[in-house]
Image (cartoon, rainbow, N blue to C red; front, side, top):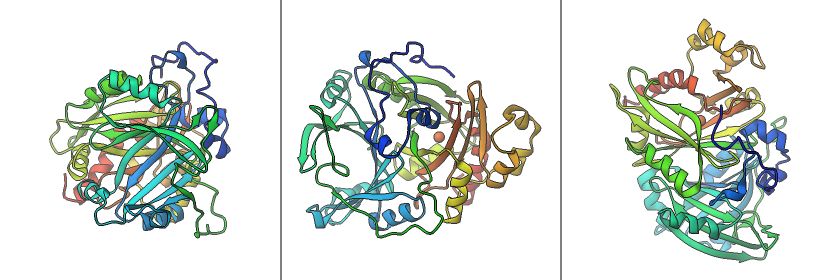
Length: 416
Ligand SMILES: [Fe+2]
């Protein structure tokens, strides 16, 4: 798999340095290259340089309980908090980490919180895909010049842990990208998340034998947009943020009898941040993207792909905790054409079949992946677990198998 940026490697820029989050997580560059397909690129010509993910911010109906669930079931670690006890009378926010990923869960405390209207419209979901950038003002100047909507002008925030500079731009639906600059004049912010948040550790104790963590890094976040809007958002990421198009393209060649989608993928220069963008395609019945758009009441983040170096272990541990994954028919694994296409992977296919883990291969290598059922009450946001072995794709070859499985679930809900 190739893209337009990999041909001119430039080692001068610092964009491949590990972020503080990655260093803290004990990751090294080679691991990250394997985990999420990091590449080198020339940052000097980038008008909107992005270092990587900063945080994925969810609005949920009950952040207190969700924080417990993501710790106990998903092995995340509580590191920070904001709420009434810290002077935030509007909402509670719990900061959780796993590997280099930072999740923030927000739930309204005040009956007048604006989070309540957001939650009433969208249910549990991702409100902010926050990105770490080396220069907020440069990014906002570029965003304005390219016609993006700035939802928060650049602002400097400080507390006893230091200073950050933040801003935000709008993306699809009511989703935003906060832009966070954590190093100012050589000083890196040392607090647990942002000024105003306090360090918080969990009262939750992992059971004996539980792994330290179940995933190490965030690979990609998929956005679902309305029919006919995919190319508009691809252009937005190209023009506003300088993201490049990755090769994977899914057209209406990938469709079942019931539903279809179109998908294109954009990525920042170093490929830490990858956004596949889906739109529904015309089909005999309502597609899974239509179902999402109806229940999220508009475009939004569909799934977050969590990268692991041992998907078998992660899936086994998550199943023990009661996480439900999409089913894959045995026929998928027994199909001789599929076996031929996949060839040898690191474990016998029977091991994948026993866990319903999907496998896809392209010219660069292969990947293993599995998808959870929706995380909340509405059929909207879910997780993918992914283990890459050279492949820089997203599982295109699995779409048909996946669709058929998703549709069986959709049918059970009476939404097909
Ligand atoms: Fe994915």
